[in-house]
Length: 180
Ligand SMILES: [Zn+2]
Ligand SMILES: [Zn+2]
Image (cartoon, rainbow, N blue to C red; front, side, top):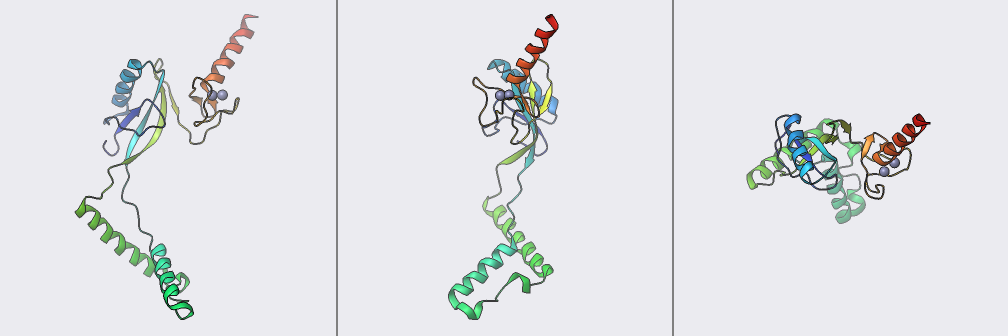
């Protein structure tokens, strides 16, 4: 998968591992094909973002060193490397240097991330190609189902806080009233 390209997934909880494409349209095309093959009415598309290296926090490092000194030398080392006594600019200088060294080391020995993150995730409905953004920690406003606890038989998000089961029921109810 390449940075800023688009990819797709049939399910929400697995690792995204399909190919990525230059455009969202191409990713959707590939997703539709696979969804149809597996009889799925919906799938996810999202944009690939390089993970980047984790960042070393100079404050964490200084804390750790101060603690180490305190454990070994006790009271005498109590104020050593206390963050309040160090200029922000000095902390920042240390942080830049530490991260430079880490990046060079990770590059040299092959410890750059091979994973990435996916943002701009949306559900795509195969039949209509309609997109609905995937919302983190969404809860259905009608039945209260969530990503981790879907309705029996499964459901997906039709709106930010409305699952497909409830949307279907509402639609059926609405049609029912019309008939009367
Ligand atoms: Zn619901
Ligand atoms: Zn539901």
